[in-house]
Image (spheres, rainbow, N blue to C red):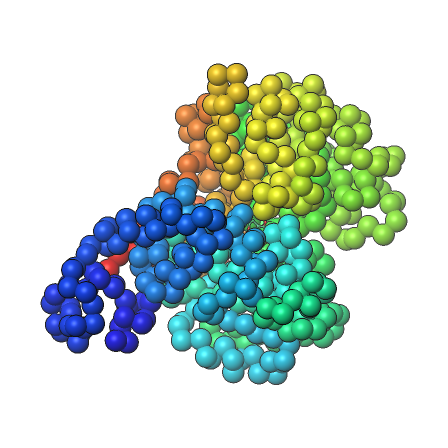
Length: 530
Ligand SMILES: O=C([O-])CC(=O)C(=O)O
Ligand SMILES: [Mg+2]
């Protein structure tokens, strides 16, 4: 009976006659023996009969808790259909309803009440973790502070690690650091499962996170720690504090940067220009905006631009207008992009003045790329680059349909959440997601496989190039700036190999470089089967 209750061992009706006899399962299962394929088909039939995405999320979660291999088989074989249900956009709603839909815990919940005992707590995790995705829930997607309900995000990210890059599920540990929440609604919500108190701040917060970092590294030596969906003020600080001493990265800063840069490389193949000649205007000035801009600056410099020139080609607009030199109260991460210029209050006026070739939306202001914004970009450029990257769909700067409609089908478009193909004037466009989900699974796999001590920006640059290299002419012809999702395991393997290569070249890896790095990567990829 224990076997049937253990999701890592359970095969349900797929236990063979011999297994049933040998393992004491006779009589505990209906007599019919199914194949994994039969089971997967049945899962899909049931899933498609469910009336809402949230119910599908719950059903998939339940499958994950019942039979892990079957869950991943279904995800891998139907990634286009399933990814939006276990990841953005549905995971956003699932986090908002986390307390209500809760059935079984997944991952670890470490709260500020556990101060002084985090190492002891981590020992309760029964597997040797090699990869932790951790959030404090303060900025979940573009939805803001969801406190401990943010747990859905590390869970979703790690499901993609296993499905999209074959990181073994047993190596994956989702963690929420529950330091309270400042979300009034949650504090009043009877079903909220986190601590009902305001967020820790200042020194108390820093020392709590530091205790977690030391305990995690001690309990799981060499573990890769991905920071996810922290608010800006914590995200930059934590990355800066730990990146040179621990194996960490911030997905929202560095992962998003690499996916956006790869999308720009693809777009430039269509419009035939160079990165160093672009003028990029960001709507948003947080983790994603400055993360992307920093990587773009490095890439422009690799094409021969000076640093000053490259910086001057990236501009930010935040809630107070254009980020310019001397504007009062600018936070540190924006300063590189605070150029000498007069104040401009709104985004459209900034477009008209600065004449960008690309606009990148990362401010979680739904609908901010208005028809007028899109038309202005179409007037300035033969092929305007328009990336509406905010998540979930309700926060997207514009829909795919609007992006194509208001630019007469000339936009080179990428979106953070999935959109269906758009047919316009006899042409069908297939927009693809400029989502860090193309990047982090491969980066993580490469870091784990090479046992790299650190995660570097050079690795994200290599990941961006590898991802861009996977985009074919057939993709570009239909308006896709990224490869098709069903190719993701191959794409992740290439990214992982490139990342591992950097680790070996820079002396960050453990052990000598193998002759066949790709072989090493492939040999480590988990395949869901019985
Ligand atoms: O999770 C996603 O879809 C992308 C991401 O990291 C975020 O929006 O914070
Ligand atoms: Mg994120």
